[in-house]
Each structure stands twice: as C-alpha cells, then as structure tokens.
Length: 170
Image (cartoon, rainbow, N blue to C red; front, side):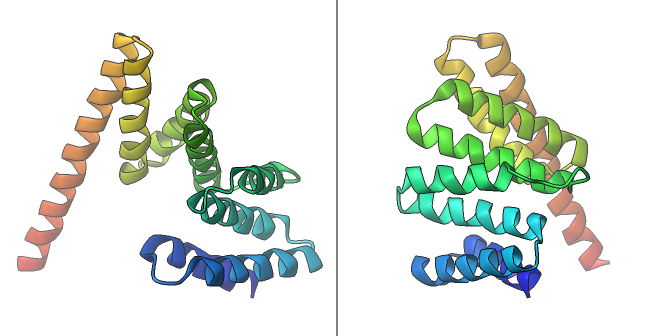
C-alpha cells in the first residue's frame, strides 16, 4: 500500500491532475503507513514528494522538514535514482530560497548521478540550472561546461525521439 501511494504521489506530481490538498493527503497517509511498518525507504520517498508539494505552496519551512526527514535513516543500499531525485529536489529547495551555493552543491551531486544512470531528461534539467548559476557567479568555464552538457543532452533526447518514431514506422 505504501508503494502504491508513493507511485500515486509521483503520478500526481507529474500530471498536476489533482488538487494539492488531495496530493498532500495521499502522501501524509503514505508516510503514516510507512512509519507503522518501519519502511524507511517508503517514508523517505513520500517525504520528498511531500516536500515538492509544499514548495509548490511556498511553504519552505515545512518542505525543509520533510527533506531532512527523507535524508534521515536511509538504508545503506539505496536506489541511486532516488538519491538523484532527493538531491535535485533539495537543490530546487535551495534555489527557491536564493541560496546559490547550496543549490549548486545539490545539483552537482544530482548531475553526477543522472550522468551515471544516463537519465537524460533529469540531467538536462540540472545542467540547464547549473549553467545559469555559474553564469551568474561569473564562472564562465563551468557555465560553458554545463551549457554544453545541456545542449548535448538535448540533442540526445531529440535523436532518441526520432529513432523511436522511425521504429514505429517500420
């Protein structure tokens, strides 16, 4: 049930197809269920989604609490995709608050994870933000590095989509 609720939370976040209160209620129930069966990974996953929902409402103090809870008590062996999402979400949090130093730190961790996992859309997202952050900091070398990665990733995504369309035609 926890996994189902977390997946539902992920779908709600992606589609923006339910009211934010319904989304938060689902995640609150998921966290409570995960707590009741000591499923720390499930609780962490729901906590990240809850933080995202709270950031959407500009409730940053509450979002930070959920991000801290997500990082606390994680199992030793953790899905790297979850870690990427956690660092990307934490980077977004710091970005909303205007803390560029922490935003860069979290996004760089997420960038390395997305690169290792070849998750192109997520890699493109953080690369674009890192390029802008480094441009603001007048670090042209790093700004170019991330802008170049953004462009190459975007090209890869376009080519991937074209290949998929060709396969469908065949």
